[in-house]
Length: 539
Image (cartoon, rainbow, N blue to C red):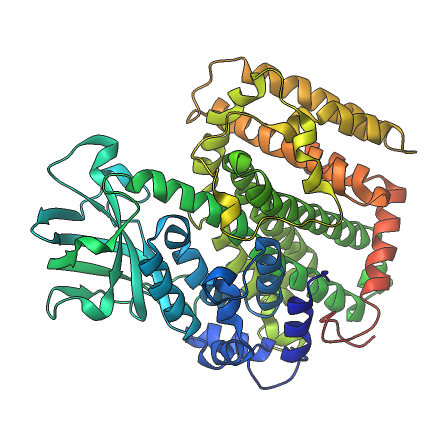
């Protein structure tokens, strides 16, 4: 599945997910989902294997040097239970402000807590404000030696179990962008009676997660809790979200992967009048199109994670592309396959313990984490003007598309991470990507589509478009799909990359018949056997 030994080791250690009992099996995932139960046994199994070490930078005693490897390890877990993957990776995601701007003491204390298996939270949103960070009602009054907090945060993962909380607060004596500060709050040191944990919030997907809120009541926090500089909380929050938005969508690949395998398995065992359901042309076409989108999504996720560490100045664009397209492709394809499966996908018995419906529900939440689709597309539309910058060298992105990639150790490679991108060497390489496609047999149509997409996008970049308008959202989507198509044309395997480029630039259009049959036969070959690594059932 990947070239990272840790991910392969974890996959092998966890064993067969079809076992009737045991942690990180499909049966355990469905039982926990039905009961909305925190997945204790599965998380304990990951902790015993050493999962927390993969969430902590190697410079602080962990094993994390490459976000691409973290993506691979997280995907192993998400293939078995997306709920466990979200929870297990939350100490890394919640700690992004600490890794980016914490003092040595803050980083040391936070890292030690993660390595001990303690849980962490990132608290940004509020009930009446949503993601409007500037309108925060959680205030922090400066007093001698620190701050006094009043107000509440909402929809926080792990808050009732958290040792540390990265908390965005507003200083009421200040206004505008400089009124926000990020704090690293140690829950064990908060004065008794100065806060209350709010009731658990129930969700339709990722149902086992413990999501709740927190209210502060004249809670004193020392000045040493400030992350970065006072008044720079918005900048640090945005840079942290860029990092999270790049990696977390990749977890949806695990659900997509298992959903496709499950659908293939159900359909090859299901008999209709004409024979097996999997032999019907429209069924084969849907499975082949889903497999193509999975390949496109995993190629894009890999490229964007590499960009984060190799070209952090481009990460505001790449993170938005990954955040929109990767979970979008997964969600849309799983919903289409549900239509092919029919009512049977809703059954909570027989095939794979009925996990398909859980995967559909869980995947929908990945498109909402840390920014909904309109928010992300608006951010892309706001950055499309970077395409008009002259003299951008496309060779700056060459390393991202090489089979072997050696990034600077995380998080040192993120030193140039900004809140907006002023250049885009990926899209600047569009003409070269088209030339590469044109040299391949059968790829002329993909090259023509990509050239036209480039011309349309450049015209958008020269227009004055309101990023929040419907036109702005369309511009943002065109940017995402064109950026992704260039990534695919420069790094995808030759035998399917032209089909992938066409699927990105003509969403909803079926692949050509010969491409469909080739993709389906390749899918069938890969899923013909059974092993813990393939997650497939016996023929």
